[in-house]
Length: 276
Image (cartoon, rainbow, N blue to C red; front, side, top):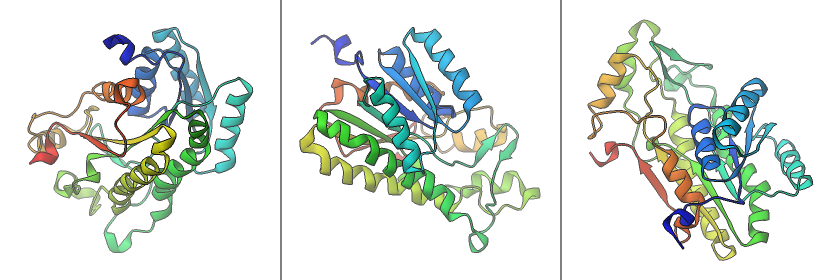
């Protein structure tokens, strides 16, 4: 097998949840550019249409889009059944959907209360999307992979699955907001919990030819506040945040025959931050 064929995803069907997010778009594009048909799942219908057109224009390969809720089993089963009606089943599942409060531009992008730990009251939402959603998608699409004796599940975790968030990156930069900690406790727990689910499914389905791995990206530069960027770059041996396209390669690798003996692992891609 040539090196090109090793990474080919021709005749594969890939499903990406949270496809319209910053990295979801990159995962979908990478898979499509390497030959896979891509199924986009997200809650935002307008963004889905735009993204599908963009990916089809870039790769020339048909893209399928579904408005779907990963926390709802019936919603995901509808996606599966619609694909089966088209004669398709999922070969590569990228569990990317998540809730991630983050720094965006010069402001903090927050859509729920964070505050201090003793006041924190929004546990269910993040756990539902990250943990329950990943489990439901694996439960719905995984058995078809088991039946086919082939498949790859890629769970998108975070560098905060192996290190704790450094709250100093946020709180001192925005004292007027009195937020306490920007990264809530649920983010660390959910992303760490994904590693346990990854290992569980990897060992459960290993003999059936289904590989299950996690990817833990570090922070991605997205025009954040310059002071935030300066602070976080001091924590990274490579002295910079990731470029948005730099995680494409690992997604293709994990979906392709280049990784046929890799399962149950967490691949941390953080510019060396967790090595310090």
